[in-house]
Image (tube, rainbow over all chains, first blue to last red; front, side, top):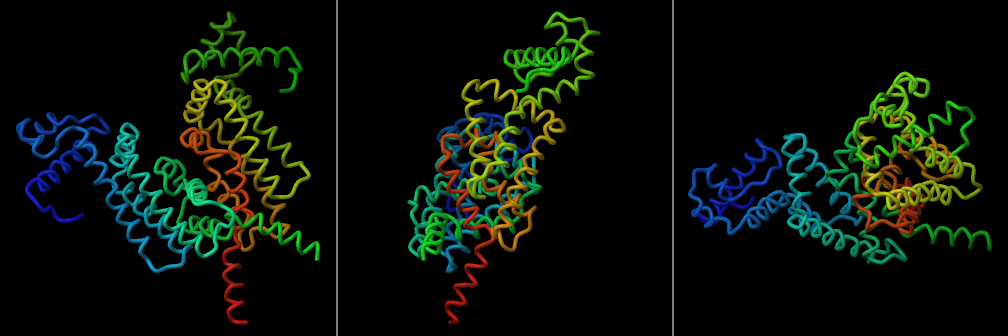
Length: 211
Length: 211
């Protein structure tokens, strides 16, 4: 995370640390600004210098939660790798980071998941950002001839569905013992060797028979 | 469902209807045999003629829930179709049946899901049976040259992961607006054109370069 630039930013970071401690202690309960002010020994009026509203606070909590994932996606998009390897890194790095975060503090992780479900409006934009980066990788791959006969939106949707166990935290926790990065790699292989290829394969079988 | 053969079987079916009504009314709450006897106006001692224990009752509830899915899998395994089309029917028919069952009575469906989570020991065998039938289809496909370089267990696991949104009811409900049978067909296409094919594809690219 970047070093806070101003006193306000430093104050926000400290308050976000306090919020995380509250979530750690109490789970995914609702936290008001007045309550948070009390916890950190700040006046109720003073806290509004740092967060305009509870929505503003929750947005900042979500932003902090997603910061690492977004950094990973931005980095991967810029890598000089084959489309297949880039796609693999795109999902594998976030999966590994998510599992590490779960294993470090399982209860905290689960509380964040609950908060996310209760505040879908706040996390929606961050989740959509994942689709945005994925679409960039899909376009790069399509320019090299992958996914013939399919349009971008469909490919993004199909890939999202095929790797759900590795990118949807609820599903990852549900299936955790069965998941590993090698299997993810084999699924990404199938995405690249297979998506949109079956019709072509059938055609070539038919052409072989006709010849 | 087969016609009940004996009075005991007919009685069990009636009691299972009563259990379903209880779940419909009260949700996924615990139901004891004595309570069930009271609901149907049967003596507590009489109900033990039909179910030996609460576990026996819950097993029967699970068996009834899974009966249609198992019938679909048994039928599909016997169909004279290409491995790809058979695999598609294997998942598509159960997905369509599951969605119909959800849409007919969403609350009842969700209560059954909750009961399943609370009694994993009872449903485990039925879920494993799905893997058993899937393995049969995978072996048939491997005999025709599909999934090169992968072993049966790995292929079963990879396919299960790639179609999670279409066969895990919790995930299906979570992603429902994004799911449809056409997309499932395109994922199954990718499974057949792609699983185990990427290494081969890379080799042939290298051979082309060397030639």
